[in-house]
Length: 133
Image (tube, rainbow, N blue to C red):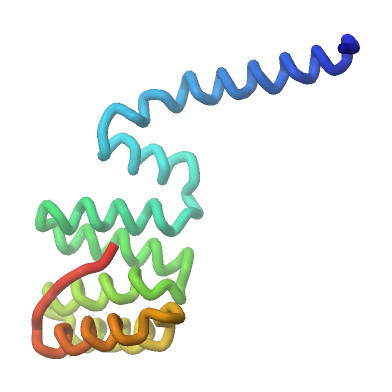
């Protein structure tokens, strides 16, 4: 092993260890993990989506809407974000906006999930509010 390869290997090992040292706190609990994901990767739509799910689970529906709007700004054609946003908007009384989001969601259903999406749409129309991960 040459000195140059040893220096390069040491550099990468040190860089990895340093990054892990500061990121280890993220594994304390779910809240810290999601917040760290948004902090370290602010352009990752899924981090914002999971953050919205956490707010939904504690009945903070307005905050969930805000976080899903952020996820929509990062990935405007993501089915599950649009679907969840439509349901949350309908729940807080903004049915017109929710219907617009549902139209966008139904236009972007992943291949192979069309039947499932139709069932979820029927439940949405029947005022059965639900979200998907």
